[in-house]
Image (tube, rainbow, N blue to C red):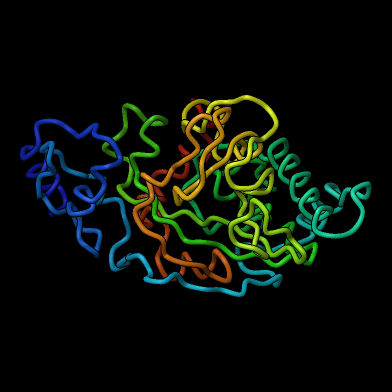
Length: 310
């Protein structure tokens, strides 16, 4: 049946859309809440055949008024910071003592942990979002999301509560990385965006005090990151995880990007805000991972080893 759907939809579309993110609502109409392919034409006559790769029965929609969460420090299946391997990582990273006590010291520690993870866990295109961080560290490689999970686990081991904001991002955001495989890029990508509770954090330049989004670890919203650089383009060897240290990242379009940072406003790619969750485990349990299980089984052996930018 899927083969017939594939053939029928390919014949219904002569060309795939290369349109801007502004067309995202049209693309959303091409698949229903069960992730099944719907052969409606978009304005450019294209079809998101990649909807076949998405999990079924996982209706996703923006939560009106947001969804709150208290977060926590307890280990979870993904954030298994009590594992000996993660405890060893925490000892290796340490906590910078020269900054003294208080919120500034903890933010500095998170920056130091980010730097360690960037150096020790190389970026790949893994699609297993629920892989425990102990396994990510053992492999020495991980996706952007998996490496953010490692950062979360380290923070929890330090006693810093974390939570995640569930974002559904337009698959077009990843087109620059897969220019020849756009048909296989899912139309929706579920992204767990970490936030850390830092008591005493100043409200100046921070959008969710006392919660510190991972995008504000190296500077407040819209603040320059200390050197002239372009905005994040999602192309080349740099991933979103590395980019956090040099450029602002704004999913809401609520801040003015500094001239030195290029375009840091990524709000055009945000399809839905699913709200906050106490852990990424809770987010993926409710809304599923980006790809359905058969697609992950096929893709992981290849993408899980493919370095970013290749």
